[in-house]
Image (cartoon, rainbow, N blue to C red; front, side, top):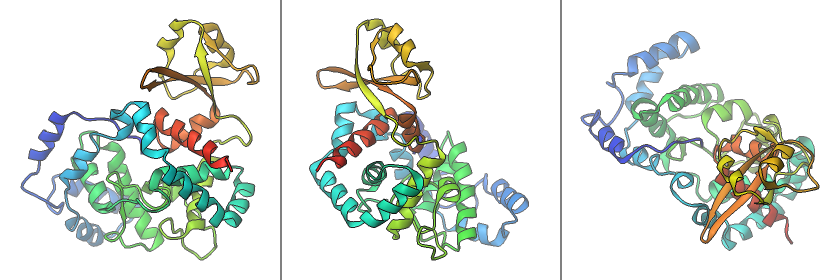
Length: 322
């Protein structure tokens, strides 16, 4: 998910805001939300009020969103959360168990099976860690009471549309503290736009249907511009330390490989002069640099973090090994 750090003082402020209420049937923003859903989306007012009356404000969600790992940990610590033998072993078993699905999905969407498996492995450890919060609680808490709430306010609206249009029970679905769901941790807008009914059973089940989950991740990547057989990134060094000031400037690919070379990067000789970005990663003893390309950028569309994208890329390479 694409989250920004809020300060501890804001968390304290939030703790006092609406402290007298633990649910949302009398929240000051409720009437405006309901009015919009009824008028713009033809939602049943009684249904939406009933669901939100049962949603609960969770302080633990507001605390969790203030400290996502990719914002508070250096690269070498963040990497060690995911690149572990237990997760690697599970990933290779997952690829083997679902080989037929991966064969079909890889051919259809052009996204390598190892990338798909790495995403599911990083996100949920292949379904072992899918989140314990009710999604309605997460999105109501963040949509109504988080200072930078616009994303979650939209996702709360999308959640109501998702459950209505797919015959899902809004109070039963569980996910992460940010409202992400299923094996691939899709937020509601991603479910609406990219979820796939792989086996044709009339349902887009990203929770218990592995085929649907695998195909949905692949379709997400395809729609965001994944380029089959193109590189993701190159490990590079600097011949001019001044190039460091351009590192981590943006997730966007704002300069070409030749421009990075002129800035002081020892660029690979086997890479076309395409758009690229430079990222610096903190090691225990110094820094490490990656020059990244279009497919790396696509990974960041799943989670807007250069550390997340690198860990997915590294994990996928490990999964290729026998």
